[in-house]
Length: 427
Image (cartoon, rainbow, N blue to C red; front, side):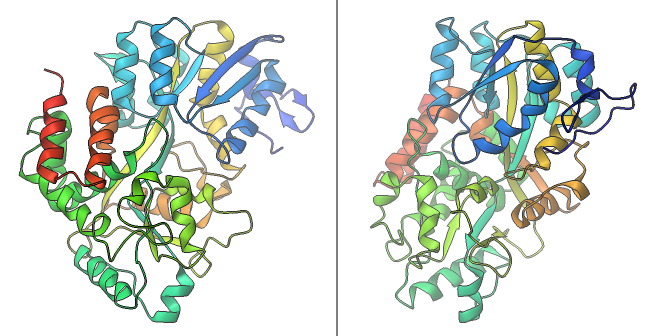
């Protein structure tokens, strides 16, 4: 276990190889437990569970981890039924708003507020704020504007990494011309089926219409069925609904709906497709021993903008949300919002991308993909926008958008799709 960093307080107490100094302020909480509920499941959960060990050993608190692919719907059910966990990891600000409306969410304690003010930007704090009250500290971040590919295949065929959308489309046609499906895709994700399509649409809207129009769309200052969103669906459809482009290794266009997003990219390793658009967190889904690097079996490139040099980056994140305010729960919240946890987690591998300014990148056990993501996030040319469906009301972002996007994949027209989503927007 890597030692935690010192906070500059008194000489650190020790528990084995762990520096317990950062935890002494929490007091003795031996015998207490905190239930932790999240949509982060195997294999991504391993590093998170390990990152809790210093807190557990130094405070005596037991963290009871529960991963559930149906988290987005079940957390609302549990909150409304009075059966909420102590801590829930909420991946959508829109869902956070719904949870706050149940009355089950507790405001963040002062210690968490202080950490967020110190280690995050105001934009990130705003994502965890509802009606002027701050509830949820950011936990981690991800970059969604990535395309996974085989560097070996690209080298063998002299394929160049595309720098514009036109070049990406031309490359897709080139690969298809060699009787190979250039793309694989999968949108099945339990009750959250459809969300990968929404990422495609958001990325295309950000590229074709620009960040200002994107912001208006997310806030519903323009209708969901206006020209920009329609064009974004159609641009995504140039890839996802083109039979000669998809679905490498799995079937026809409709197979996208039944292929899990976890399985979809694996077709690259099998040689059945060449590219897979999926977020940075997908790195955890490659089989153990896979060489994920610029000249390895798989790597990722930035989904290009409309023009070379454009850097529109779509991303997301998770937020630590408390449904109890017992001392041990507050202590764990504070730990999760600190630079201490960010650096403990970063040394354990897995997905380590975070917007926490206290994360020491030079000490981070960063994968090549995480380094790529961090470079994108830190590039001054980058225009970053949070995942749009995560910011929309839950009735849209985590419901109609997912469901209608799935219907779109299986044959529904763009016009019917955007009209149905617009009709679902809360009045």
